[in-house]
Image (cartoon, rainbow, N blue to C red; front, side, top):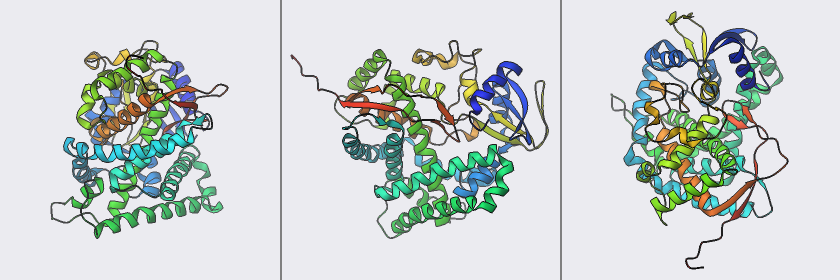
Length: 435
């Protein structure tokens, strides 16, 4: 389970069916399911009976604070309502220009990195998406050393959270050995970096970014969020907003590198829709085929490979009894690869998502951004971000996967490439009419 939980759970599904019980970390009984009826019941129909587990509320909350990702109940509803304004179509249109400026700067740096041969695309996508989300939040690019510090903190802390979850019997050792304290100090340093930007904004002109949305938000009594809560929400938006997209883009480029016919069709669509102008939020619905490609990649490699919930009271879904206190693990990766719902499930086929196909699919057989009231608040931002970066990369570069490497997923909090993905990039030759 520690080395490859996806492989273990897949074998269990083959042996025991869509829903089975097992002991998480060898200690705590959990129900694992890919049954769409149970998934829909837990995430949507009876969602109020199911709260986020210790992984998010306790483990992640310990390092990220109390924010949208780590709270529930009325506090969550209030924060969700306030933060949702930052992802309205009008706000996304305004953010498009900020995102494009960030991408242009990042690709200039990327150009210098690809000169010496193959590069691991994963950390480069991390840098590009982190810079973009940071500028969407703070309206100005974070310093290189700040990007590095906060990014490494997020990555290292997530690895530690996974260890705490899959090997809970080691938690006393982590505390005595100083491992817990070491990760707490990393969090403190990252918090200080972000707090400095928040406090600086207090004395500056209002910005047209997500940080301003957080600062302008008002509760029913007219009070705004305190800086500490703005810090928690900012950190959680950084976590959710950059790593999911960077993972998705890494897997996308890997998949596309061996499918020239799909690449060419996407390039033609971007050229037809955009011409020479940059992508804005209003262009996204016009990129129908490119959106299909992104959706299929998210099916094969969903960023959040599982979703876990705790039952607050006894519940029954069909023949499955769920006792109060039980952990329910919605196995997203397993659902996305279930042969019953996805013929040739391991194949990359964007035609699965041709317009209108969603009406023919069983609900909750595809949910890369979660589902129900707690579905990803930044879904439309993520799609804009992925398509914006993808469009620039596809039209600017020719790329191939470097030989002699093992490419496989690693299930942490996010589904990451275990050994990275080394790729060669060359700036594409411009097409000259009449040549």
